[in-house]
Length: 570
Ligand SMILES: [Zn+2]
Figure 1 (spheres, rainbow, N blue to C red):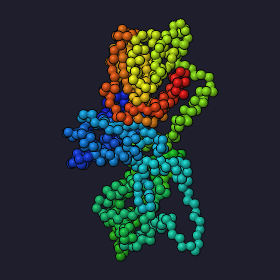
Figure 2 (cartoon, helix red, strand yellow; figure 1 turned 90 degrees about the vertical axis):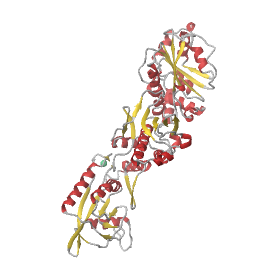
Figure 3 (cartoon, rainbow, N blue to C red; figure 1 turned 30 degrees about the horizontal axis):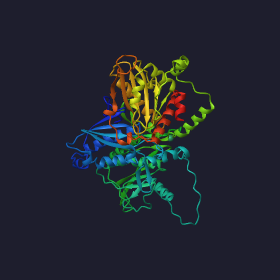
Figure 4 (cartoon, rainbow, N blue to C red; figure 1 turned 120 degrees about the vertical axis):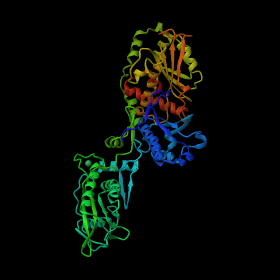
């Protein structure tokens, strides 16, 4: 199924996408005791698939209801099977995942996937792309899959399938894999075999033998076919013989009626036609294979068959089944299609730091960029005499943009003092005012909002302050949406790769339209209810500067950067 029955939680104080994954048993002892293995596996999938989806969709929170009574994270831990799944998804679990128990809820905080070291643009549970490594068939891990796709794309290895004639060799006694393939090809072309006839070749990169008895033959073929076809098609082709004993190096065959053979052939055809493929070529050929049955004779009479399957090298990539990778789309956890997965895997990596420097360079060469329209208006309207001079801002926190906050402070006499109280304990930081942060981020503006201010400071997560003209509880959603969008854009556009959360704090005015001292009330403070792991809230000077850099890129890209903020951070 491409969809999951995982719910997006809407009534949350987190400025995050929160996914509810249902009931899960936690703790190594408790998970070991689970009698229902299917349920255990299902729960594991219900947690690991959303984790992958969250990694691929900007990072978020995965919420599970703890099924077992008296569970304590500190005493009982998580459970090995879950831990293995997590370790399988990311190379360093603690870099991406944080775990927290809140009463009956177990929260997994998932940081957005970053490609900086691995070169992988997305997280994948299993590529379902197989390769042949000498005599074994293995699923490619994400790194191997990327290397494989890149090789195929760059060299176009599969594109020209015309065999080049091998150089002639004389007198040397040389044995190599290609000669085994040639022997297998000769064998494939035969019509009749002798029972217990000795084989002249063994298993290799291009040859696999299976000695199955008649019982459940069809089912066993169906079971192994996806991985062998995928592996051979991706690794220069090969032969799969069913009815040869690798151990004894001889022909065994299986007993079957003519009608059984038809059934097997049909099943193979159906099976192969369903394998997902990803093309980057123009021809977009189908998987090329041939299937035949070699008759096995014992002292002149027909005693069985060998099923011989020849799989040609494929032009692009053949999957055993759709890659096991997920994302959040339209508020649903969805499995990526083969095309989506292939494109994301091969998507050239954006170089954020370079684009940052390029933009700075452009900035210095070009005339100043157009200002935010609202600032433009202020600049023209405001005369020097009207300016309201303050003894604050403090030296510890820089307020920007000057024109805007001075205007706001003069209109709303209570604002300066409130801000002063708010940032009293901040050692270092920047407070960025805006008529509407929502508008700056490309969202809808709301007329009930007087202004917003974003605090990026040391030792605390960024806070988005929103000041309302009236009491309006619905605007909590507006504020959370803005914070969520900001976080996503910092990661996706700004290239910020660390853990980050944005807190929201909303004030409203009792006196409508203006904020004067004594009429400002607090409506909401997410820091009281949205509890984050420590690694999300410890903002060092370096993180602070990275955040500002990412914010600069976001605003620049969205065309809403104003010159004062620009000069403050660059
Ligand atoms: Zn192709």
